[in-house]
Image 1 (cartoon, protein in one colour):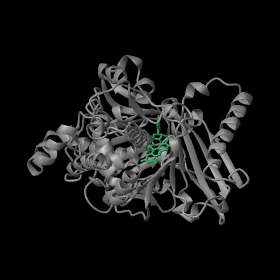
Image 2 (image 1 turned 60 degrees about the vertical axis):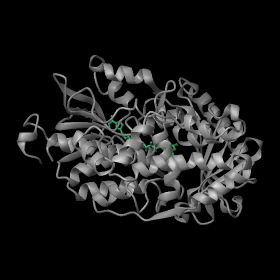
Image 3 (image 1 turned 60 degrees about the horizontal axis):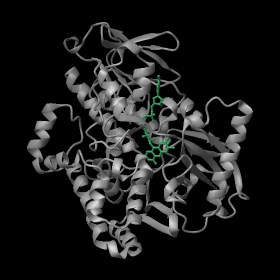
Image 4 (image 1 turned 180 degrees about the vertical axis):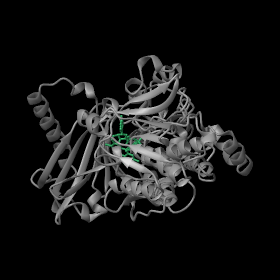
Amino acid sequence: MIAPANRASTSADYDVITIGAGIGGLVTATQLASKGAKVLVLESYLIPGGSAGYFDRSGYRFDVGASMIFGFGDKGTTNLLTRALEAVNVQLETIPDLVQIHYHLPNDLEVKVHRDYKDFIEELSAKFPHERQGIQKFYDECWKVFNCLNAMELLSLEEPGYLARVFFQHPLACLGLVKYLPQNVGDIARRYIKDPELLKFIDIECYCWSVVPADLTPAINAGMVFSDRHYGGINYPKGGVGQIAQKLVEGLEKAGGEIRYEARVTDIELEGNRAVGVKLASGEVLRAQRIVSNATRWDTFEKLLPKSAMPLSEEKWQQRYRKSPSFLSLHVGVEASVLPAGTECHHIIVESWDDMQEAEGTLFVSIPTLLDRDLAPEGYHIIHAFTPDWIDRWQDLPSKEYEQRKEAAAWKIIDRLERIFPGLDAGLDYLEVGTPRTHRRFLNRSDGTYGPIPQRQLKGLLGMPFNRTAIPGLYCVGDSTFPGQGLNAVAFSGFACAHRIAVDLGL
Ligand SMILES: Cc1cc2nc3c(=O)[nH]c(=O)nc-3n(C[C@H](O)[C@H](O)[C@H](O)COP(=O)(O)OP(=O)(O)OC[C@H]3O[C@@H](n4cnc5c(N)ncnc54)[C@H](O)[C@@H]3O)c2cc1C
């Protein structure tokens, strides 16, 4: 525990309490524990990971959400998952994925995003030969963003000492980032590309992780995603995505931190306007110097704090950002013979560009057993198929109607999958359906949302808040803070949050 001089009050049980053991919360906690802080993580569910968790059924180990994992590279500074694990002396074996996505798009447009950059540019240019130069220039510009990020240690942009140091060490990279911070991908794409169908392709390249088209997707995030897939690459953790959180917890405990499961926080305790502790559903109250919320901003400010404590800055944030849809998810076990030789791990299916952003429009497919056979019984594969969907379509249904609607929605998705995997229906061994209600309940996220999306076109990432909040002593971490959704992005948020708190506590 740190010296009393740096504490707000002497009666704290911990230096830092983190509400939630998602990847954002765990990276914050492990970073702080490794710096000597006394840390407690409170997780309402039975296991850590949140949207990067897992569940076991009938011999299958399913990822609940994420399975296309960035941040496990072995070079540069943007490999934040590798770095987060190393910081607490734990390791995780990963399996390289040689194709990030196999796109199945309208007008029979099929594109594979190869790990090798030249192969990808060649494949896309062969589909749009008249745009060869534009394609090269657009993706090369994304590399410029990435190279700026990848030149510097990624910590808190709210810490003036760090900003001064990093500017002194990497002035050109910093100026580059300042230039791209207010830009969106659409502006850059239209500078180089004219073909409307290719611009649609850039839209789905953004939509598949930002859930908004290129015009609303910040250039900084795109620089990371469009380049790191060829640099550090996409790598799948051996044993399933749930291993990342399990390993971070192992590291947290090794570093002296604590975690409690089935520990749902119902309130953030305030003294005056300062956050000083948390209250659990059991009634227990725990105090800490600093409170970190890994719940979404909506859950944090609308559920864990009294209405009267809602800061004006949060009201303004809610005017800029809204909740993205949740997902309708199918977790499927199938006979291995259903998948043709050469099938890739990740697929995106869009039948009509008009439906790309609609509920049940874009279909995401992950088959992690193509990388790690041990996640399914011998002779079988896992298919996780999911598509954006809104909670409103599933709320307030009587249970019989809810079940019927789930079944109908599942067969619609299976019919779509049959087009690329004929025989899927006959080869089905296991099927479980999750709706936005399931995501809300098990992931503990308001309306089951995937995260914040801009209400309208904003200036790139400029409107995303960092980790400090208007409530002294309270910080937010995870996908509703800078730089947004995705495991590597929330790891970035975790590094930044821990850095800011470490400075505030004098660690
Ligand atoms: C279907 C799906 C597919 C995805 N695919 C990918 C992908 O391929 N690649 C990728 O990088 N990203 C992907 N993502 C996004 C990625 O998983 C998330 O952005 C990221 O995991 C969010 O992490 P987080 O730390 O912000 O929060 P979360 O994962 O939401 O974790 C928050 C944790 O806090 C806990 N909690 C909340 N409130 C309380 C409370 N009151 N008391 C105690 N505990 C609480 C929750 O139980 C949860 O464990 C996907 C997400 C989904 C849903």
